[in-house]
Length: 443
Ligand code: ACO
Image 1 (cartoon, rainbow, N blue to C red):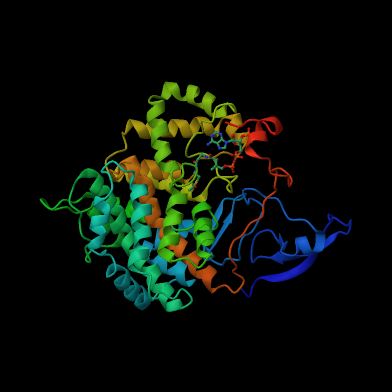
Image 2 (image 1 turned 180 degrees about the vertical axis):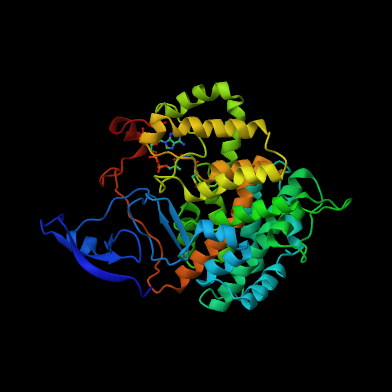
């Protein structure tokens, strides 16, 4: 945080007494400066209005940098493409949590720690059995991860960095087991226990796809593809689910409960749920000749339909994650023998048509990470309902890295936004038998 400094004073010409407010401006290590509005009310007598927080920095963070205009994504300063090319997911977890890439000895110890925390308490099996078999796996994950708070609560001191690190390692380690168990439960198949001789990605594939009655070995190409997806989805600064983690965490809530809130946010179709939506959209289009019809709907402002996997709040140029995945997509589909998948041909035609369409060009709507991750998840053999749970596995490290950073930050206070009140002014209560005459009937 030492790189962050005040560098100037901004003047904002508003105030209930006609006096302009003088506010400091904060300079990040890269990116545009930010007016510090914490004293806005005291200085100008008004609050700031920013409903979706699109203009507002909610914290200082040294974890991930996104430049939406130029399509840049850095984890702790390293470009995402380099990390996907040269690092393992577990290495990335260490990097996000600790700020530096691990040495060989650190990585070995960390891998051992993560590998040896992958089992879940057997009691959790009973919790799964309480769900309907057709429950969405994200609903199951919200419940099961929230339930971990009941197993790890007493004795957890969130202000002790060691306790925080143990909770973080547990979450990173157990999330693949929890996601895979949700899948197995939906199929009516036995849960598969984690295996310590496999890599993080291989172990997840094994828990998802193996059955006790026959030998299974995840194809190397599938493990490599999953590893790339996990790295790409590991963090993305103050996205909705990470902000949810921070918001709940700011109340000093149990970290497992905070993670359940983050999972709930990720599930939304405008956030992580979009990868599932991409497949639904492609299935709805069905054939290339129906693309114009679906584009007409996407462009019609009176129709709530949106083309899933396109557009991003921050990226107004190509999503750098999508760029990496796009290159890998063909490679992965070749390796998995699925290059001739007609759905891929449809997806690529949809991509081609939208990139040349004025509506999408003017609004800077490019394919986002979910567009390609949906296709790759399908190639791996996952049903659409499992795309977002695997995204949640990948993003867990981002959530806990931000939670750790927030709890350690002396500037952290409970999140308590303001509102622009639009309800009635104070008024006198009317007795029930007189209400019809005094106020409009509701309902
Ligand atoms: N299809 C059609 N039109 C779109 C789309 C889309 N996917 N996305 C945005 N637009 C249009 C909007 O209708 C709006 O048009 P207008 O200016 O004529 O009113 C304009 O583009 C700007 O869109 P906003 O909704 O203001 O952009 P916002 O930043 O609020 O939304 C979001 C970003 C939610 C990602 C949006 O692009 C969307 O809904 N995309 C589809 C869902 C999706 O793929 N989400 C995954 C994001 S990546 C992730 O979370 C991991």
